[in-house]
Length: 158
Image (cartoon, rainbow, N blue to C red; front, side, top):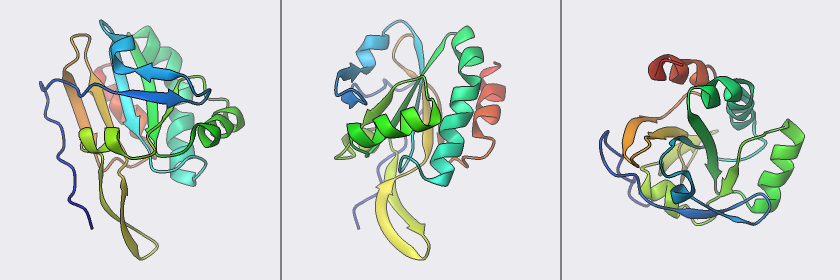
């Protein structure tokens, strides 16, 4: 098993990244310079927990955007898989492909997990809020998909 990546601390500079979106186009954190961004990591598109969380972000997107937050979802899925997921669930925010888990590792969102009795390394469900200056303003690890966005909105005052 690989070592668990280190969680990010509030106030730290957010690690830069460029990943492919569902259309295969590059999307970089720097594209959002001067804006607040919610970057959430999910293990696998079209699985029950990830669908619950993605649809929750979709359903709350207007209020989050109204408060000045953009949303980016990141998983190790291929651009083709995230395109299907986005289409099937009518997701209207960018989903990004992190096939080698490099961004998940940089954000402290990669490590050991157990699913159905099997232990393996993978993307950990987590959310990091990056402020307009590119610093971490909030980070949550080991997030429960159910009710996560409502808890996040409370934390952010949205």
